Length: 190
View 1 (tube, rainbow, N blue to C red):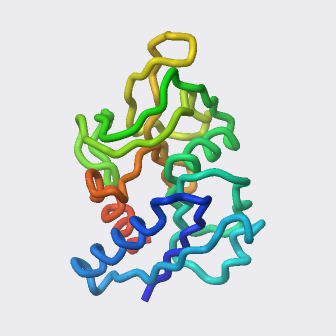
View 2: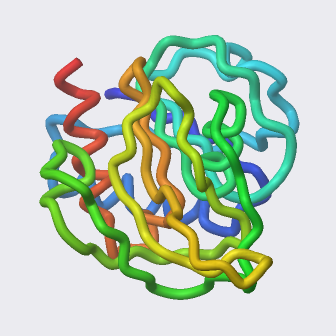
């Protein structure tokens, strides 16, 4: 069985990630994943978590676990923001906290994000990626108002050269769980 390590940054949604993995396993028993939640603050580097086939960095807060393993990774919410910033992107503060289901625009058909067009996804954040890192590909966008009252473009999802993906929203909450399922299927093929 493949192993999915979830680095939890004090996120309330880690349990939802595990629930999504359990649902995926019911639908795909031949591709099943064993989920292990680890408190990110106790792991300065990813390899301290032991063997893993997939790494998920949750939302929440706290210092990022240093990347040192070459396996597929999915960065969610807060982790999407810090991954973009570490890679050279820009983070901006929004005028108000985004909470609830929002529509994001998937820019083209994608193996993980799904079909081109709008999809609903749960969001809980006040910071947003507004400029992408040079070596990343923008997969999805939305619009929001920044702290200065200006309408801005928000980068909702990015793919990195190593195949890792980062997404602002919480696909584990069910409205866009296909993103998790597609990611797990994609990583099985690698």
